[in-house]
Image (cartoon, rainbow, N blue to C red; front, side):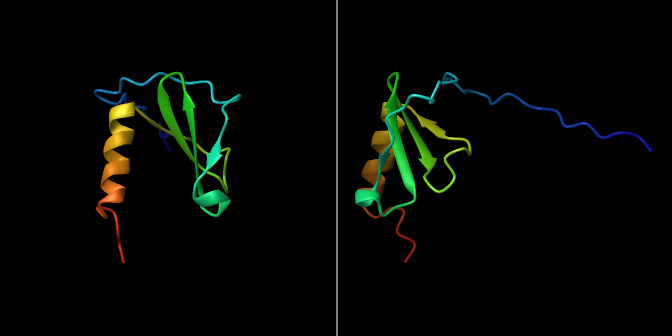
Length: 80
């Protein structure tokens, strides 16, 4: 039986650096009641799951983060 291999594809248009988040100052949302933490690192915004801090973080540019926050404030992501 032949061995299967997984090929890693680069992300088209991915212009974000591989940030060192080991010393990041993580801040909890909702006064610590939420599951999301953010950190401002080297001009980017990193976001992670506070219940699984070892899992990968999402990295946003300031413009992307601003669009997300504006959308959230306007109820764009309200699923109720």
